[in-house]
Image 1 (spheres, rainbow, N blue to C red):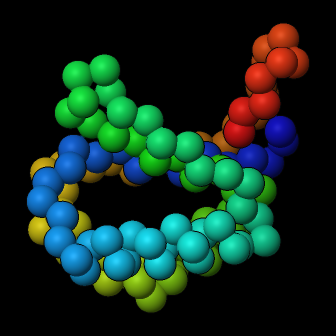
Image 2: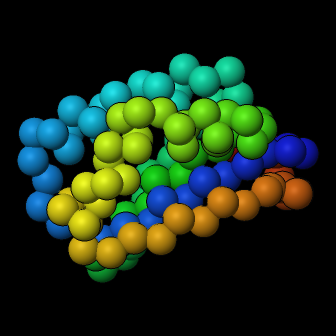
Length: 105
């Protein structure tokens, strides 16, 4: 688990359009094809107001590649159009504990 990077994109959804869905799909495919990609997990808050997409990577180089992906840059310019609010948190996973029966990420 050492050197695992978790990129949390926590957001309150707004109105989505066709351009959003196209870009979102392209970004997901690009991220999943990066050599350092591990997995992506999505969560919804109990009240349904917030969503969290957590991308796990083996290295910061992959995170940087995703952040520089042209479709990602376009999406960043339109963030206020599609989201009511958002927060990005990039963390390094330094330890993981459990009973060994749940593999996450």
